[in-house]
Image: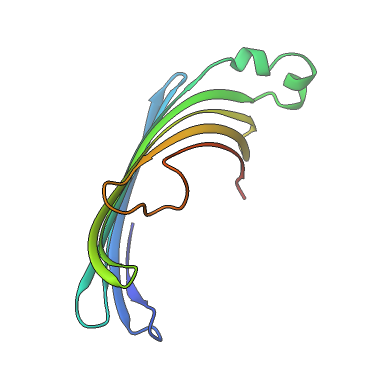
Length: 151
C-alpha cells in the first residue's frame, strides 16, 4: 500500500510513504511481517524519515484442550498459540524540539488465546531497547495482559 497527501499545518505539509506486509504458514505455524516507510516534510524544508518493521511467528499449542467439553461446544475454533515477535522503528526527525536520529527495538514472547476469530486474550512479556532515547513510554521490560477485538 502507499500514501501521498498532506497533513498538519492546515493540510499544507507533504507526507508520502509505502508499506508491504506478508503472511504464510503451514499447519500450526504462522509467519507474518510488515515493513513501512514514510517521509514527512517539516516546516523549514527538512524531511523526517520514519521506518518500521516486524516479524512474528506463532505456533498453535493445546488446541485440542481448548476445544473439549462445553467450552469446545461454545468455541469450536478456539486456538491457543505461543507467539514470538521482533519489531523495530527507525526515526530521523524532530523529537522534543530538536532533530535527531533514533531507533527502538522490541522482543515479545507471549501466549494468545482466541476463542473465536474476532477476539483474542494476550499475555506477553516484552523487552525494549533504545540506544538513544526511548520512543515508547514505559519500562525497558514489561508484562502485558490485553484483549483485542476485530470489527
